[in-house]
Length: 442
Image (cartoon, rainbow, N blue to C red; front, side, top):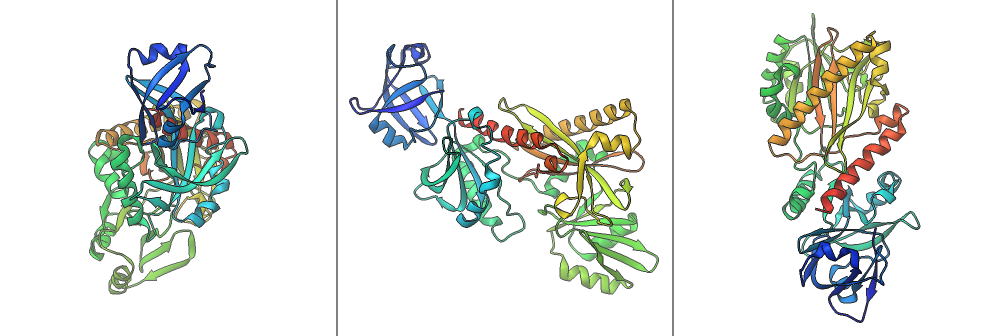
């Protein structure tokens, strides 16, 4: 850990303890990097300066626009000295919404002593791309408060903003493209892949685990799927949290359409014409998927599936943070917690509901993790830089494993809290920001 204090006597220089001399080697000049800014300085060394401090000239501080009241780490890479981390969290669409997320943002800095450096949170509205500055919030570790300010661009960025089903989606994509152009691999979980792209990427290697899926172009696509399967799901390609999902079931008198968790608002269509007109009004071409409905295990009219949290740690290695069962609200067609579902540790559900022995549970969970590992490998081999994922896994009444969905925009790890495992929730969020830290120091 390094604390910076200004030096007004010398211009464009840095004074470090003599122990750092080997790291600098024989470079007469070094480039100090903070965020996307850099300045060339003359390195000097002294035994009189503490090892946990450095003296940086005031003009260099001004050029870097670096807050000097925060603890930092330094990383030497040949003639470069990276001061950081400097992490940005895109947390909201507007500045007003940003302030409303403050209670949630505290999760990321709960273990600040393991992170250090500059952590800023900002909104889409707070970004000035022409000036390359951000108006947002900076975390003050002394007061444990988020303070308003204007900052230069960070060195790594990850997003927790929800825009896929709103009019802000195009703004979000343009903004993330902007950061991606500047940061490259120091921005993770972007570009995003949607449900259809996921299916296309994985179908060759993992087709036996994927529900039959086609993209919606016209009503006859739904009709063709209903001829093959007694029940199907219709889902928005970019949908999340179980919103705008339909379940269509063949019945003797026609078809029954159910909506999300609202089982009372089902529609019964006796004629193909009426059903076709309904689909034409509701669905947009190439914006929805039609998917085979899996015959999931149920208990007391609650469907059960599983969420697996996998996140990269500070070494860039994937960790399985938690395996959870989701119980949908009674009579709901979705299992999402936000739609009224419940959660518990997955192994407990495998024991009490699936009646599996300890050995059987261990074997099943191992096979699920192997499936997840393979899926991640395929996605990363296609160039996706991932670090934070949520896998939705189904197990049907015959014990077959299904890969239903991979959440990669902003997977909701709050399921750990609902399952009374709050520490796992904090661990997932800590891993997110530690991985962002590792990227920031590279």
